[in-house]
Length: 216
Length: 225
Image (cartoon, rainbow over all chains, first blue to last red):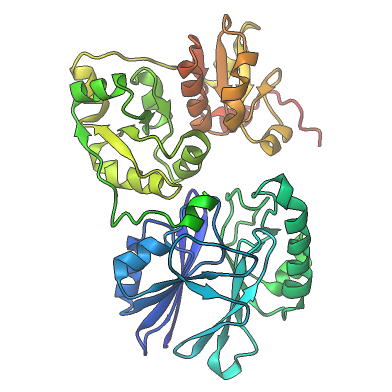
């Protein structure tokens, strides 16, 4: 089983980060780490993986990003973050654009711009290399949650209308067009202030959310 | 925090150092305003006796969120712990929402403080039955989120969402006693510490709060929806 895909829940801030790797090649990516990075380092070591990529879904407003901390700790990784939506950063990183693809063994991660919660927000489609155009999962960050969606009002009232419109297009033109079988891996669980009434389950499917999520 | 994350947060290279301060040195640091004084013990410990002026945020995972609401990340923190062995765990909760400056922690905790003969402040703790039987002089405040308040509350209570308490404290009558409640007492204990900081003398928490009120079968107001 070369694919390693692990979810890491950080309580309180109810944040979900992910480690995706391939143990035949010994490489892994971490998506949206918190600043207490030992848990990722220990997990990667327990699976005999080197963390080579640290991906961000967006510029977080509710927690400190652990991306730089994790890269500094492991020495083998770079930060990859969105340069869609006019994002600017004060440190060196690898810029992501819609359609960028990264391969970890037999698994492909593809970047999709999903603005709404923030202008630069991206999600990551996960597919088997043999069926790279048919993703089996999507890491949604703070764009789509179980039973909820990311709030567009956290950047201040002057941005809210524009972001709400972008969020509407992200939900309707991207998520609702995915097949029902695609599994959703969100950036927060229940209790996070980033979405209203986020459901208790930590993952879901497009099909289930299509039926029951009030935002879809 | 968005600006911080876009600029690139400082790399800590591990947990920040927190100097251990024995009681006398800790007292001097508090008096010199070397940092914001935060007592991370549970509500019962805090109510029973704490350092005057302390803010109570109990060391549970949700501490990260309440620190984010209530503290300035630019100001260092002075920590009171339940046990010195909890230091790393508590610091981890703080760094998640941007608090990486620490002026020190009280070595030996509150037992060392009281053994040194230093000052204590207290918060009275009322059961839900005492709250129910209290006379009209008691001001009851509900510090839960608006959605929780709308699902039912203690009759006659007044709603002030905890993050807004500092700005609304002047609406409360300083001559009358105040009791604060939330869902469990955790947030209400934070509220009592804020009111004490603002000079309110007679402040009490309601451990068990709304959960206990409902389990005791006491009357509920405002849950018609």
